[in-house]
Length: 227
Ligand SMILES: [Zn+2]
Image 1 (cartoon, rainbow, N blue to C red):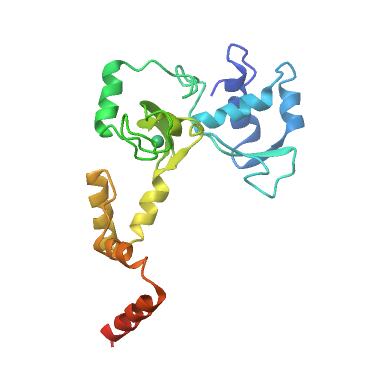
Image 2 (cartoon, rainbow, N blue to C red; image 1 turned 180 degrees about the horizontal axis):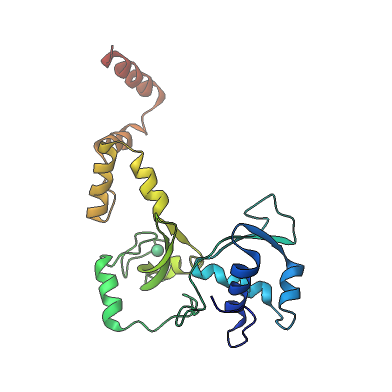
């Protein structure tokens, strides 16, 4: 690992090196220590925050109540930003070719993967119709590593969705605890690219508007079935 004092690196990279070599994963550092290490960098706090775009986990009091206001915890190192080509923020990287863009849109069936709206569809509120584009989504894998992947997103979801991290590991974990039947239903949705209402949900749709008397009759009928 290069030295954090090496000024050929930018301040974000140096901040990462300082955390990795001087603070160490799992340890707490204060704003004062950070500023003392980088007296010449005006916004070193912000550079540390920028490391989060590269999968670095740095908790503040908001995420970790045991911390004081001026403390942060360097929880986990992300991408090795000091390696060539790794220090550019995922937000800064642009310039997909038309072919790359089309490939992503096709793979996503021209649907926004956040809200499900299709290209040119109305949001239903009288505003401009949906425009789809390709966005970068942070995906937290089961191995705990964050990867940037391309995904189709509409103009509304793109605004404000930049910090979103899709926790693939958590999804896989939850599915692992479900029954084979639930997993089969889920796999069907995944293949179809949409959630088809199950027979139970269709039934619920029919029954939810029933008046009280009819609901009571339904309850009685249900009770009778399994006795
Ligand atoms: Zn959307």
